[in-house]
Structure formats: C-alpha cells, structure tokens
Image 1 (tube, rainbow, N blue to C red):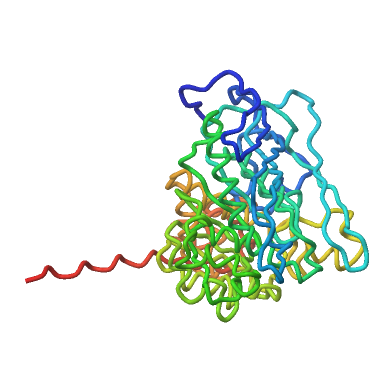
Image 2 (image 1 turned 135 degrees about the vertical axis):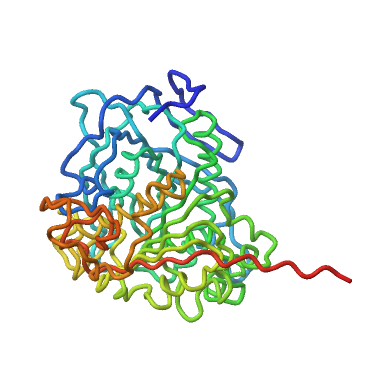
Length: 463
C-alpha cells in the first residue's frame, strides 16, 4: 500500500487535543515491507475459512490509549430523592491495532480479560494469544479507522479475532473498554444504555483529531462495529433515533436519556458524524417495540451490515436484527444469518480459562456452530463490506451480491473449473456457490440485501 504524501518519519507522544481529553500514544512511522505474521491466534483462521477471512498483507502492532472525558453525568449514582446525578470524569481505555513493522523475532501480544461468572463466583479471567506485537512502529498511515464496541460486561480481548484481522488488511482498529457494571446486576443496566453511544461519539472525535493530525488515519473514512450492547451503541451512533417514550428512556432514571432521544435538545450528541459504514453483530435493542420505536431506524443512511443467529434467545432475532433490516429502509443494508446459531457469535473461541464452567463457556461458544468456522465467515463478510463501503473498492461487490440468498442452494458442478479440492468459488454464470467459499462449505447461511428507499418525489410546482 502506498504511503500518502506528507508523512513524518516518526510520531512522538500525542498531546491533548482539547482540555477535555487526555491521550497518550507514540507510534513510529515507517514503510510497509513485511507480510502479516501468521500464528495460533483467533484472528488467523484455518483451511476451511472463506477466501476473505485470511490475514492481510500487513503485520500488526498494538498499543493502549488512555482517554478521560471530563464532567460527565454518573447515571449509576443518580439520587431519586434530589432528582440529580453527580458529574465525574469518565475514564476510557482504548486498545489500538494498526498495520505495523515489528522487529524480527519480536514477542507477540497476549491479551488478558475477565467476564462475570455465575454468582456468587468471582469473575472468570482468561488470556488470548495474538499475532500483534506491542508497541511496534506503524507501517505508513492514512488508514481507515474502525471503532469497535464490545458487548455488555465484555472485554476487547475477546474480539481480537476481528480487530487483529482487520488491522492486517490496512485498517486502524480502536476497541473501547466501556467499563460496564457487571451484567449479573440488572439494576445497573441504565449505565450501558446511556453511555454506549456517548462513548462512541467521544472516542471517534478524540481519535479523529489526534490520529488524523498525525496522519495515521484518514479522518474521512470511519466506520463502527459493535456486538450485542455494542450493537445497540453503533446503531444509535449511526443515526437510529431513540424513542422518547420507549424502553430505553424508561430504563434510564431521572429522564437523563430524554435529551438524546428523538426530538431532544441533544439528539445530535449521540451521533458520530461522517460515518462510512456500520456493522452490528447480534445487536441489542430489539423487542416490541424496539428502543428506537417504529421509525427510529429511518435515521440510518450509511451502509449497514447486520449479522445474527436466528436462534438468538438473548436479544431475539425476529424483533431485533431482522426487524432492524426490515425498517432501516433509508440505508443500503445486508443481513447475514447463521441458521441455528445463538447470541455468542461476536466473540472468539473460548479461551482455556473460560472452559471449566458452562456459564463461562457460554459467553463464547455456540451450541451448534464451531466457533472458528463461524468467526471466519463473519470476517469474510466484514472484510468485503468494509472494503466496498469504507475503502470504496468495488472489487469486493461480488462477495456481497450473492446469486442465491440461501447458501445451501448454491450449485458448483464438479467438472466446472476450478476443480481443486480446496478451490474458492469464483462466482460466474455457471457457479452459484457464494464467491470465496469452497465446495461443500457454504451451508447454513442466508444473506439478504436491500437498497435504500428512493427519495420522495418533490412536490409539484405551485400554479
């Protein structure tokens, strides 16, 4: 990948972009020379992965950022007697992955995290091997930025399957630690409901200024990716307007969500401006009605990829991802469905530390689908979607414009080339197996798509 003009030979620590921001990061800029490192990590898929799931051309570096947003309402400390909530600084750590130039033999990162376990057990801790090298110099710059929002009580370490994979393909990926209260305490759900879109807006603005000023990213090419509660966040930040009379408004005490809901004075404060695209995996916020109400999804105008299992019993399918697809009619949109899959499709395979108790295992694993296979298919389509709509590369279009909506009905005659056992489908008039999939390995999937609704005709001129 060519390096844009104007890049400096090194990047010193970033200084605050404004009085409300503290950001510490140092990245050295150099030219890309080495391919992406392969390894035994969730981001490095196996032999049956679809074509676009494979690692890209870049090695990967990783760093951690520390952001502070000052003077924020602490909804979890709301006092019903006085009708007020205190204001405090909100600390957000952000994990960053980027195309890098690690030195030969450099140790690869090992990510650590923890999830709530079955009460009263303490949180279950785990570690995850990666392909990235911590603090590696950056390979050039001008990359699109993908901001990732994890699920409720999750950790970015559990999504390295996609964060590292995208970084190897020429993206800067920033995953937010949302500092959720434990999901086992349902009385504190107001925190994620209020903070998810606000966190995304804050981090997007901070990184646009700092990483954009240092030319690591192209500030005009930004997209969002969210899982579960993060899916609720990215849909809201992409333009879905919250229903002022809906469930989300009722869950947040003191009317603190109402200014950000449809028609509120701060409705625009939960919107990330200038987005190119959004991906929502097993998105929360559904139900009858959804937290956005019957018209809220009309606010999304950027391309949208929804990914869900039709057996998702946590957030639902028919009243969540499928309903969002049907009602986001102002967006070019796609819905990838894993038949028989449940909710846990946004996380990687269960690490060893999460395999000893079923409660811990079920955070990660699906009862039907092999997780490595499932993640690889997601990575394939996310790569095609971001390539087409964030990078603007129309060569990815045939991977999305599939000839049959039900993958299992695709045809590829045994004598039609390519005939190698592990060949990828090239598509074309004689082959309806989805492009990039191997023979006998495009099963159990559905991909729907729909164009945005045509703009209404202007009223006739007055006589």
